Image (cartoon, rainbow, N blue to C red; front, side, top):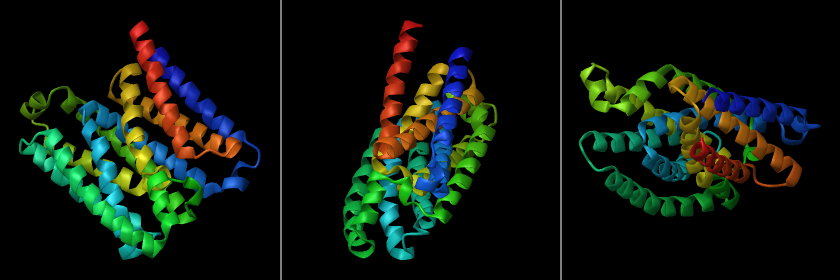
Length: 289
């Protein structure tokens, strides 16, 4: 296990070093785009490991739908620059409502079905009006994602948020992994399970709502699911899993950004494809081992 973790960390460091050495990188795409990609990788990598630990994979499918609904509503009310602030609040409320339903005994599949159906229906209406108000290009960015279109305030805010989310995730990783192993034992031991659940829902909401224009709706699910799913196969312990998940997200994001520069490909799409291939490879190695 340790060898695999070290290999991931070495690959991450190598990918970042190669990215840093690309000639005129920052002149071509600018520091805000690099900051945005790094911030999104930190945030997604961190929460992905926690989602895997709690086996809340259905949230990885539901949360992007919530964000895609919240983003155009926020853009209509606040404009497109600071819309993510209101979007975070909207997604957080929807996530907490979903979590409360689970806490009251509702079936996870039923909660997911209702939330996806509701948000998908409302999103069509919200995107219709947003396209007329802020333009089709802005709406397309929410769906496809493009860090190259992120401005300075949003790029550096994404990096700050990513660092904060990664730090908080590392601080609560042991408790959340413990709850994931046995929720009943965690309750008996006196751990405030609902508080940690609520914190996890909020971390997911902040990540997906704030990074939607960087990664896009379509790849947000991949970034929430796969880094953590791979990390739990190659790492040992909660902290190692979080670190491995962040390293994987950083590696895929760095390679995706490098591909966009060298080959003219969309960075978010390449990032998602790299993670899919990494998951397939990790499953193959796990079976052989």
